Length: 572
Image (cartoon, rainbow, N blue to C red):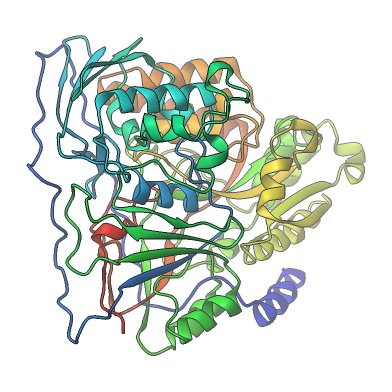
């Protein structure tokens, strides 16, 4: 421990990023489960309000409004705004502002009608018929039709990137019955189909086709518009792309013909800036050139930001957790006893103490905020005797010094180095060598895409796409996500895949949650990862911004906390 404290002190003195001494974080409410019938039911119709719900508690400006309201936010980059490609934090936030979806996630953990005013569900749960609004325009002024929904789904499925793994697997076909009615037929009933549609961003078929290159990997669809959609949009959302120099920022302008309801002081322009560098963020905030910071600042950086006049720190509940993703196929961690040894050697209490006050150690493989989380799994704690006993059973124990564990941490999140160095010190106590490597995010994504280049351990935050444990289990441990940054464990376990698929197909909630619980127990017993803590998402923001997420009034689904149409800006 003395060794670690020396390292920690050095880092805390020299670091310029991550976290703060702000007001106590808001409690993370348990996400509401996705409701599902326990037996076959008659077709139902879900009615929608006649317009998008107006934001609550709008703050009236106390002075003459600025000539142009601007919302500027920093993000970890890159930002992929193609609706069939993007799926990280910056990308998801951009897509939520540029594109509309059939349904919209709410603060209660369920979904509201959005492009779809209502929908009917067949008795067997296999046929879903959505009735679309008739007043929706794309950014070029053309009307949104059911055929655009069909095109967007088929494009997502064929490209197979982004959120395709979430939206497309159980859908057999999508058909436009008329201009304002679209029907989905599923190959099996699933309780998660409806909420998954918050990730089906609807693009204009005509706009995409007009900007598609004939030559490309998608046959008759050429490049499917992928090159053009890197820097342009084909959406109907409240904002549209104005400028996008890829390495710098995304500038969006208000789409005044949007069908929904804007906050009375909604920004005219939104600029997402590609930096998390602490000095840059602080300078921008001091110069009143930034309204909301990224979530990746250090304690020291947040302390400095909080001292700036008119700046607050928001602590948002999240569906995210911090994982040490353990490569289960790379020696020595291909042996369960070596994995258990490192799980017992790590000092979780010290790790959590380095984070935001109120942060808690993970209990099992998924965040505690998710419906279906199992609170009764075994929780690893630092126990050197247990660690040494497990290591003695590992097949590499006799020459463990010849198997160093390489830990890659994300360069854009400097505080990750603190946990990596703590881990290095802890494992030295049982004779295991750890090499700590700083890696840019793009390199992390590239390295973890192949088994041969994946490190022993990658340190990555992952947010559940939906507020239910089953989706996080699929994101993190199903073979379909192997080779992406969301799963570096390389489990590729057919039995686990089948168990996850069976649970997701179980309509009865109690039965489904029981299956989730068993899967979580199995993963813990196999020590497939090192589960660090459930994340409290932190942002600095100016008090002239009326930000519903800071009051816990928005969905915690990744990307929807910064839905600019619902944010008020009265900054001078």
